[in-house]
Length: 369
View 1 (cartoon, rainbow, N blue to C red):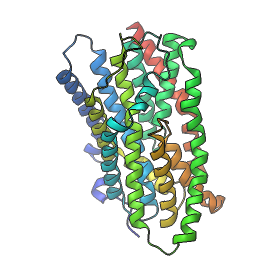
View 2: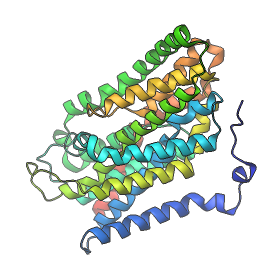
View 3: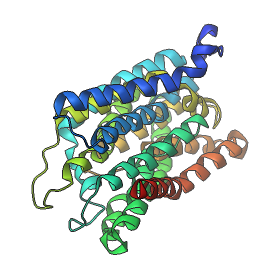
View 4: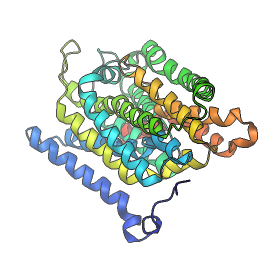
């Protein structure tokens, strides 16, 4: 059995450990501002550079919260330790994030033009408030080591802030239900069942085969598809600034550098901040053997991987967590740490309204300033 822990020097809390996250976020903000001023003419309007910087911060905390979803089974089943698993997941996530520039642009449209009516007059206050709402909730959840959906956070912030900014009639409720809420509601149940089916098939055909090498591959694929799936959603919030003042019929050319900023920030967050939530999924839900961990991971890779080409904003969080829970349920109630599951599900339920309220508060403050 491989030791799961980082070396002792990495888990001791020192001065750097206490201030590591604020320093990193500060560097990301400054990097975002620098990028904006390099690629765009300097403007006296600070909303745009602030928005791009906060978009980078959201990508950082998305990485910190979500890298766990594809690599927790490696650690939980004893195939890897935390350091190697997080490094592997971060690398594959960044590759997937860069690939999304070409393969998952449809998801950008889902979150830029698919939730708010084209007739709505988009404002910089709305765009910035939406970012603040999403990043504030994902940050809070990451600090509490709770795996939450960045997709849900973005959706909640866009919808609630959109109602306040443009009115109820400007929210595309049908699109919200069909393209976002339905996949997000169905995917956890599908993941739970699919993970169990895969486990039974593996046990039936490959019970005595060492599948650790396949587990590494499925984890890499899941990390890759997570980057492929999540990057366009974060980019969409930055792309909103390019829609302001444009006709809804005009085609939107999204700058490639937006994807680069998000990919790098997501990778940085994965490496530096990915340990907390990974521990929750690897150790605090259920115990896994090698085949159980592989089955749960393979379910995540296949489900999330097929969602990006179809432009379906499936939550990696819900898919991976429910696949792991399904493995535990198979062994009976005693095999599941239900308090942890309860906390995770509660965080899922309040993500939409919490991010929405935070976005609304930010919009109100920005509107009167």
